[in-house]
Image 1 (cartoon, helix red, strand yellow):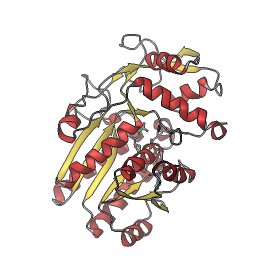
Image 2: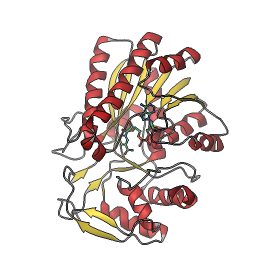
Image 3: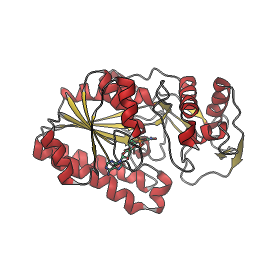
Image 4: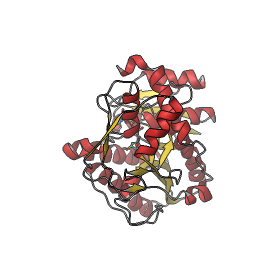
Length: 336
Ligand SMILES: NC(=O)c1ccc[n+]([C@@H]2O[C@H](COP(=O)([O-])OP(=O)(O)OC[C@H]3O[C@@H](n4cnc5c(N)ncnc54)[C@H](O)[C@@H]3O)[C@@H](O)[C@H]2O)c1
């Protein structure tokens, strides 16, 4: 099977390409390098001894996307390409609506023309808004608190409408919880430029003394230690979830939604303490005011993905902390 992976040089996409290549899928990557680097292609090759075909294109460019389909027989598309920084989406909403919606619509239009029927979409637990109950099940009410989340929800709505109109389509919507960790080789991982938005990239920068301390946003949440609780999932587990979704998609028509998480919630301080212990480093932190829009706790009910996809996360929080730090240590030059 030949899979088009959009955003395949990004954090989750690159790990997914490795898992796909290891399972002998053929991989074609489309990425405009807006949040990734071409070196990742070499690293994927180093790990798998296979070099995926790569197109440096903007997925919003219909002609260029069509060219990929003309030059390669694509059986399925995994669509990672998009912008993902919640804070930036608040200050630059148009950038987020344009890129996330346009890239998806363009792909879907070309797929329709080219009769490619299998689509896997990167959604997010952010579409559950502020859940009234935990753990979160796929049939919970949906809402969002920021433009980034709204792009995901709007795309989910587009996909639901499309699925009603085109009965040949197989659409799997994967709602990721909080991916962290890195490839065991230390070659692939998360490498945001500037001050990181997310907790784990921030922790590793503090541990590596590139930032003086971690800001912990609020310690008066309704959680055991007062800090926010999230469901962290190792990026390699998350990547494996896409292979399970491809298998499901090959024998299914319609649209389905799956949580990809571990089902276990860890607080900010749990993560900091585990990171310090397993890596034998210090992560100084300061408690500061809550961040607007943050919720107390968020963790998945992973039962549906287990029952219907056979997906279960195997890595625990220790591995996530060890692998995240290993990636930074092995790539010190690029993190200066
Ligand atoms: N990382 C998370 O915490 C998280 C959580 C939930 C959902 N997601 C979603 O998963 C997907 C992948 O996330 P990630 O963490 O790997 O992000 P990432 O930024 O590392 O990867 C996205 C990739 O897409 C590319 N890209 C962006 N717009 C493009 C365009 N128009 N054309 C071609 N390439 C384009 C970027 O260069 C980058 O390589 C995103 O859609 C994101 O919203 C991520």
